Length: 385
Ligand SMILES: Cc1ncc(COP(=O)(O)O)c(C=O)c1O
Image 1 (spheres, rainbow, N blue to C red):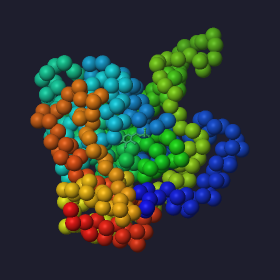
Image 2 (image 1 turned 180 degrees about the horizontal axis):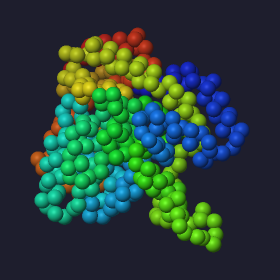
Image 3 (image 1 turned 60 degrees about the vertical axis):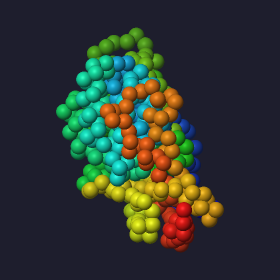
């Protein structure tokens, strides 16, 4: 079987550097919040064109941290797509708020700005929930339509989070999502374009007050400089807690590994462009749809997703030829039992539902060779279903 994502090829390239980085951490012993964490945060912020990057335990916590920092909670509405990974809507009921599901655009699979606007107006008209925030997703690696989404959010007084778990490193007109979003989040799950060797996540933002509050929240609501300012304490304030937080830190070992991976990430994004181009050239006209990237956008190609009228038949055919595939996502979130009670935007989510029956992801990573790709393309073209 061809690997769906070939982490071994990347490891073979980086092994001496990663081994040395791990040894450095073992030597200094600062396993939690060691020096590599701060250093990685600085490098990540620079890469993502943000003033600040705050690392945390995973990409799900990265979404929850800004919601908690903005004190979004019961009675509040947070708008998000349904055609996404569970983490996107999951964090909304975590804080007691209500997810409102919005449809996606049929070509990019990302949030439909017109439908978002209709959803916000419908929630306002009903008067039961207060619209507070939007979580846009950079699905399969490409940026959502941030200029339009940010304009809608500004007009309605809503915060905008870019869930870039799949799209960290993607740009729109050369700019990273955080130019438009109040916070952009990412995941370092191993299969992500910038993945570590375990769980990890980060939030990027230009907002200093937000970073300070999230820094407190990721360590059990510890006192921040602003909390301490002007107060005198009889004890060391280390074990004073200013708010209810959580324990969500990036391990120093993961930070050390990610520093080495970030060093080659720009080159890997470039390699992924070549692989995506080759797929599209070989498959156009042979499947219902090859991916379309938003005008001015640059995807990091977390996934290369085609559409096929007999998706499941094609997947079986490819499996028999040693080509693994994946379906992201077979059941949109609003159709899943724990989420079925939450509101959906006016007119329902026909695009999300139609796409979930047709999409199929092919093997994709920076080290895909032309030979392997030719085999995959031939296998897809050879299906007569
Ligand atoms: C769109 C999206 N959001 C959030 C997450 C959550 O990231 P993590 O698995 O690191 O918690 C993922 C990753 O699986 C994702 O694909």
